Each structure stands twice: as C-alpha cells, then as structure tokens.
Length: 172
Figure (cartoon, rainbow, N blue to C red):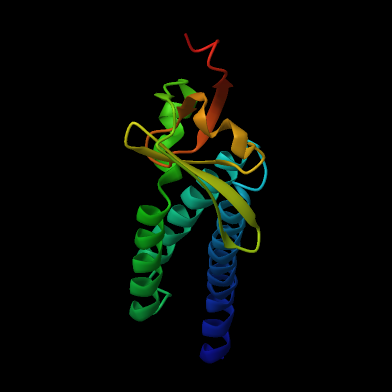
C-alpha cells in the first residue's frame, strides 16, 4: 500500500516535469524558427516571437534548475543550454529599447553591400555603415548600394525596426 501511495504522489510531479520539458523544447523550436525567418519577412513582430520564446525558455529553465525531481545532470544540461542560447540570441535584452522606442540610428552610404544566403529559409542583405554591420531584407535592389541609408535598429540583436533609402538628391 505504501508503494501505491508513493506512485500516486509522484505522478503529478512527473506530469508537471514533462510539461515543463515540453514548454522548454517548444520555446526552443519557436525561437529557432523565428531566428531563421526574421530576414525572410519584413515583420517587426518576429522580434517579439524570438524575445518571448527566449524568456519562456529561461523561466522554464529556472523551474527545472530548482525542481529536485529532475536529475542533477538534466538540471545542469538545461541550464547550460539556456545560458548559451541567451547569449547567442540577445533579442530579450532589447525589450526595454523596443518598448521605449529607444532605437540606435546609423546613417550613410554602405561600405559593404552583399547578398548572403546561409540557410534554406532565405537570403538577406548584409550592409556595413560606419562600422555597424546589419542585415536588411533581400528585397532591396543592388542598384541602391551607393545610396544614403537611414536605419533604426535595436542595440543588442541589431534587429531592424525602420529604414529608409534616400537618393543622392534627398540626402543633400
């Protein structure tokens, strides 16, 4: 009888543990898909998808870390993976700047203007203006490479919030 009561007591925590793991993996998947698609579509809201999934990843990691029902090895692996992902994808650090519209600004003619396609999801335009490297949508034509760019971006993730391409007459 004692064994049955132990099984019944541990059953909810096992279900809870499975739920937390699933939330962690779903957050990882959604954030990764958002990262892949952020240059394919010119949608600023993808920033939120990446940021919220990263914060959810961190929150579930804290639960895993302090939950004694997880093995020590599991707690260490989830923690290391979460910390690495939070440093690699710093979108969550830009939430205050996004909410206050405190964007960074760079203006000028690009010193580097190159289309890149690192993965199947699509290509992006790599530009460098005044030693700031940014990724713009690939829909910008190559003929604009010598024009004046005005770009508002977030400081940590360098996500583009707004950009304008001015002709030589407009930039004077």
